[in-house]
Length: 447
Image (cartoon, rainbow, N blue to C red):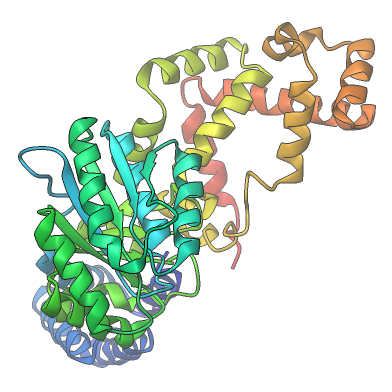
């Protein structure tokens, strides 16, 4: 996320010495201006940032730290104009959230991502397939709902596009009867601003008393995306924006441009293809990532929503005692998948942001090694999974036959697992984590 901006900011900051002159500051500001404009930041927002960075740096003494602080403060001022974070709920459930956006913006996927986020917050969520103009959207949302185990309301096969309002009303009534906390309506998308479909949105909004109207903006759309968002805001009213597709070649400037030009809250960022790749937009945290400092707070929140404290304590005890088995390993792989993509996780850890791009193609679902380990574990008995020390020669041969692997593959996996378990046990002891961080500090990060 924001890889291009982050690397550019680092390069600019590193060109300033700890004590420097006005010529160096001017060169840095000129380069910062080019970087912002190149990354689709609105020209007036760019001008404001440059002026503030220059003035603040001069008033605090020209140098690396004062320039960096000035840049952070200037970015924060623009993004803070978005005021609120997260979702505003109705006093009386169910709270209805209307998802809007152009066709292809990632609206349907974002609906599922939001549903998973709210489910992990303990909310009972109902997804509603209300895009009757594109039948594939109904099937897509149904598959996503099944994958995250969230209920979905789908229209009857005889429903026509003009029945969208009726579908929305029926879904809300079902939510009331079944005591759902939140209803998320995936409305029809648009190739461009269409008056007929805008009227449909307006009717749905007015008839079912929506708590939030969220606009999904494609982060690759640049100024076209800004103009579309402005149109939706003028005709329907936008309570917040979800930025989608930040896992791709997004330049990142659209976040600053939307905050500056439209002034509606930036609420969430879809940062990957996984349904779990969904982050609350908190300005301080986003700026921390932009500056390459990670976002431990968001990572901690995500982890807490996936792994409960009792489970974490149990795993920690097993690791310390050297009792971490293959069953535990598979369970933790599932938990890591729930946190999102590996690149998204890396971007939140200080010092590992540079690895995010290198990890963008790492998929735990598609990894051959993970598939082999799963096949091996599925061929074990319960006792073998819990205690790898039982795996003698005859057992390994039986497991190899059952999993379709060679005995040499079984031996290699078990050896790697044993080494990892020993390292984990060492790190869990006093001073172990400091030793790991020291080792990582001496490693050369990939360029």
